[in-house]
Amino acid sequence: MGLRRWGPLAVWAGAFGVGVLLMPIADALPFLTRANLVVFALHGIAAMGLTLVMGFAGQVSLGHAAFYGVGAYTTALLTAKVDWHPLLAMAAGAVIAAVLAALLGRIVFRLRGHFLAMATLAFGLVFYVVMRSWDSLTGGNQGTGGIPDFTLGPLRFDSDTSMYLLAWAVLLLGLIAARNLLSSRPGRALVAMGSSEVAAASVGIDVARTKMAVFALGAVYASVAGSLYAHYVTYVSPESFGLLPSLRFLVISTVGGIDSVWGAPLGSAVVVLLTEGTRELVPRFVSGATGSYEIVAYGLALVLVLLFLPRGLAGGAALLVRRAAEWAGTRRQPAPTAALEEVELR
Amino acid sequence: MSEFLQFVASGVGQGAIYGLVGVGFVIIYNVTGIINFAQGHYLMLSALAAVSLREAGLPAVPALLLAIVAGALAGVATDRLVINPARRHSTLTLIILTVGVAIAVEGLALLIWGVNPRRYAPFTAGPPLEVGGAALSRQTLWVLAVTVAMALALWWFFQRTVVGKAMQACAMNRDAARLQAINPAQMSLYAFTMAAAVAGVAGVVLVPITSAYYDMGVPFGLKGFTAAVIGGLVSPFGALAGGLLLGVAEAVAVGYVSSAMAEGVAFAVLALILVLRPEGLLAQVRVRWA
Image (cartoon, rainbow over all chains, first blue to last red; front, side):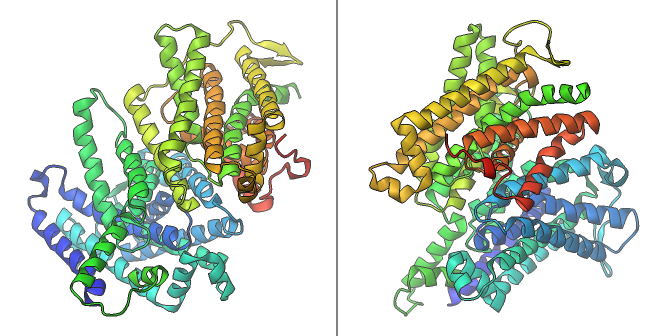
């Protein structure tokens, strides 16, 4: 059990250590900046929420960035305009995001099939349009600024390095919370639902309600990440929460793997590299390329990973870890069935 | 009243386009169970391809036909390169795959055509026509004529051809269809090809009205989906009717309230229908597939 249980945490600790070492020199490295190391963690947190929604509710959300935006705008308005404490504003954002998600889920999960994809797409676009048009509240296209630094007692997070530490700490908290949740009673219900809705319903799990709860939880993850993002950049505008960011979260979750909470951080690292790599390389081949053409890489990564590694990078890594564990002889029991195996992996 | 008629006149053209995109959603959804996120992107590809072919000096008819073929080939590629290899995966995976196709296609279009919208002149020049006190542009008439022709062609295809019947059988029950020696993978290919071709037709007739731009795939896809949902997602003709309703609703909202409403109408309609009548507005008058 040791390698399987603690292996990922050790990898996380290792990555964290590497990040700390990279921090002073990150800007000098190709494809990497200090900001990337922070953004990696923020996207990882938000995408983890989407991973829960896709992996366990079996639904795809194309409007996840709207919940990220709910957190960011709530924090922006409450801390910059009415001087709330950052933690309080973050909590308010999380509550609003959860309520919105629950309402949306209530409508959509009554239906069978995959309506959530289109409903969340529409929700995300509406959020974007509202933030852009509601000048008096959000500053419209200009956005709203003057967001103070995040503070926690005597601590003030006002630099790349301190935000890095904060974001990675929250990412770790999110990971541990998700892992613990999945081994709790409601979590077991989730896992059961993830493998078979019909079977879950037949043992008394309220599938529609559970889906709604996961969707709300996913929104909370996104909202918390959004609040941190607002403090980090001290300025929010609608562009950061439109369709492209939603698709980015989808790519992060899917490429990382939706079967495991470790997928989101993995996918986030890949997407940071893809984005920076594309922006570096494409202009050499296509002169005068403008706009967000990194989406080419997103699309191809999404298709290729799903075709050749359907359980994502985390699924592939878990397989490697399992092989290693078997090879090291730490597992003595006979090979469990595939379904049991999947449950244990989480 | 004449004001209202004018809004209807300006809405039906757009609405017919939404309907044609919606037809593709219905065909693919019923034959394969997939909601194809790239549906609006076929329209975008054909529209931009048509612009480029016209700019390259090709006469109108071959340019538009070639552009439609290009759109249809994108549908073929979606099925053969992406959907078919993954057909044993869950529907969720297949839907995300179509999202991947859509993003990749949009990115390629951005690299090829850039960010600026482009257009060509209407098919026939001349002032708008007066119909019952409302002005109807000549291109809108072209759109409506093409839509009617497409509706007739679809009716003939599903009602009178073996392949059309086989696709209907696949939509009703895939396993039973298999027992009749119908190959669902083959039907999936036909569905994607047809859906892309119909969207391509919509794209090339649309360009003189709204221009073609690389990120038009998502809004037209979403509105096409809304049109299909109004029709209950079961009938291509329901989708066409749904598209006309949506187009007129949009034009009326823009006319009476403000142009900022245009974006909101489709989403509001989609939300209302999903809440109140998930089986679609037209379920009572359902005509099935023909």
